[in-house]
Length: 258
Ligand code: PEP
Figure 1 (cartoon, rainbow, N blue to C red):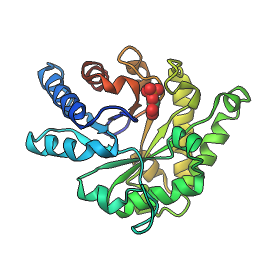
Figure 2: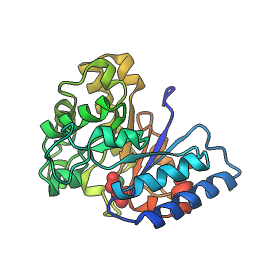
Figure 3: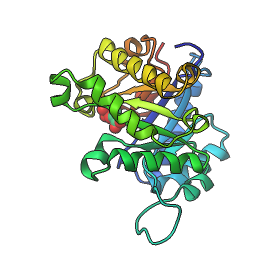
Figure 4: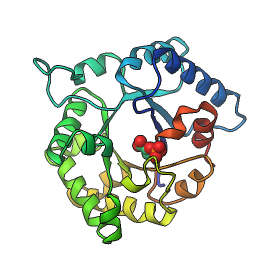
């Protein structure tokens, strides 16, 4: 994994109100502190719904927790008549570190294309936050053996217009769509093949030095029982965790994957 600090990020999706959010972060912090294991070398982040972010911020700041937090989406626009959208400035004001862009659920249910993903990544960076750029193939593409080409093409789209300085602050999440929320986890070799291809593409688009720095996460039915073998792969630098991040003990066990 070279010198990259692993990142374990919990995507809560559309779950938990702000009371439940506080309870989960509190329990997660206790569970991590109680553990004899050292997780100091792993960065931990939670990605709550927008309505929970302020509560999570208060909790994290008040108790000086070593937990970062982020948003699951962002507007590509700066401000103005965009009903229902949340801007980079609003998120930055809440101390947000990460913003997920291009999650397959947004690509599928909200028709987000590569150009919009690129604009959202740019907006997050403009607000001083790191986008977690999600890429990954559906089952049909995987069966056709075109998963590497598909995923690297999504990467080209998402990084279009990002400077070297901006790209350096990004995180990539390889999430094969057929593995998200299905219990169908990619094999460690599947994950390594695509994460390695992603890094190679970043080296082509920018420099090898940048590719060596950017963290590439795997996401798709990660659990405490399968995380260690996935994390053992050279080009996997962490996990984007959905369902399993809603239980404090389970997510804490994922964080302490060794
Ligand atoms: C996700 O939502 O990004 C995800 C990987 O979900 P799950 O872990 O539930 O498959």
